[in-house]
Amino acid sequence: MIFSFLNLHSARLLFVFTGIFTFASCAEHTTQITNMNEELNTPAKTDTATFGTGCFWCTEAIFERLNGVIKVISGYGGGNVPNPTYEEVSTGTTGHAECCQIIFDPSKISYDELLEVFWKTHDPTTLNRQGNDVGTQYRSVIFYHSPEQKEKAEHYKTELDTSGAFNKPIVTAIEPYKNFYSAEDYHQKYYEYNGGQMYCRLVIAPKLDKFEKVFKNKLKRSAKTEE
Image (cartoon, rainbow, N blue to C red; front, top):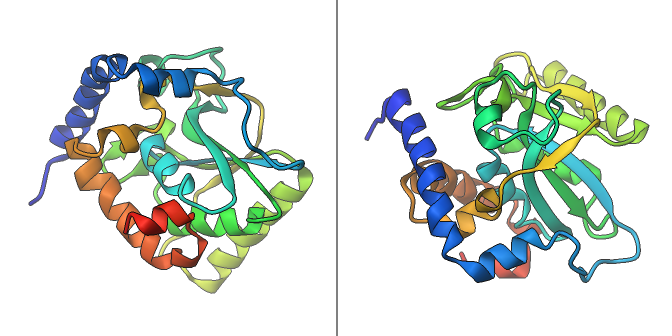
């Protein structure tokens, strides 16, 4: 079944607004997400990666399944407007990209491995677009937190372009991390709490299915159990 861009994009916006009220009724979910200062069972040393692969619902659903990933936060990065709302970012005028901040344990999963997942779970050759989601807010982007992350990102981008891994040149932006604003509560763990929604079933679920097959050996035990 083929859905037009307008229908699917409109459906996503509808889910966002209806999701506000649905999520508001789930007090336990809101409590888990809004308490950003909660104590995590984290190792002594953690690192952070910030990636944009289009819709942050997809990005979050994928990366939170990886063993070694401690927390994934959906939000907005790289723009010029402080504390933007989803509605503002959706206009494509704030400079922000929908992205996820990924806190991980480098003793269990490396930045290189996260980059591998990044490259293989979205199309890095489409400018300001992923599927039917169009706009600068959906750009493919890596916000690096250190010179080492920058070097690795640029290295793999060059290697992939040189090897012809993709039919078209990679347009992924590699930018210094300058800001990140957590998205509204109802966006956090969106797929987990709204898996029955049309966008989740038609867009996110197929991506997850492919991802879990390719990276089966890198999944958390709970994610393997769900298969």
